[in-house]
Image (cartoon, rainbow, N blue to C red; front, top):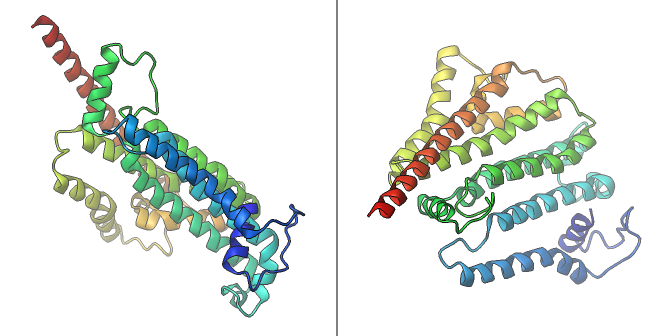
Length: 319
């Protein structure tokens, strides 16, 4: 709330000079509040510099730092929403410089829906992009397995650069659910339907991470055409064929078209913000079946990698 309120004061100082928070009675200069916001970024910047010298062959940020950065972005997004909903919405909705909410019959509902969309899009896009850093490369995975068998790694560190990315993706998903609970509280809509919409949205980040890990560990890892072809078939071609065969109309039928995020994200948001929305079991099962399939393939490739490393080390000892 404090971060969001300070951000509004910084962006619109001429309009919000008299704004005072309900929860905070003290007043700080904008530069002080900006400094508080920059502290986490300074911390991450320092960690990146340190890793550049201590681990020059690794990414500048560890998986923990990437999760901290994702949490900061989603936390600020949630903070802006809470600040506007609890205090600023009364001023911005009815003012002449309004952001458009006054044109709707229920401006408060429209405000909440716009912020829900902002959070969901940020979560999905950032989850897909950050999967490139969560999921280790073939070189990192091989190095991790070798060091583990040589006794250099005493305990299994789930956030190691070479360890599977499933744990980081799971933490990212839980983090998104915790922050999104604030939006659900405003909607007063804690239900199985809303939970299903959240799980539907999370499935795309989980599924993409599984596919990326499979790709990086498989024999196709040097073939970028394979990566693009499978992704396009999964997210575009197959859903298009399904829509043609079954004459599905997204406006009236929430169904297996949820296999693609281009349709499923809108379906998930509709289930969250609309109590009257309905969905069948295929809506939730289809994207999660695809996600589980991708992770099953990734697990199989990791086991093959472990066996290959084991054989190589045994051959080296015999030699």
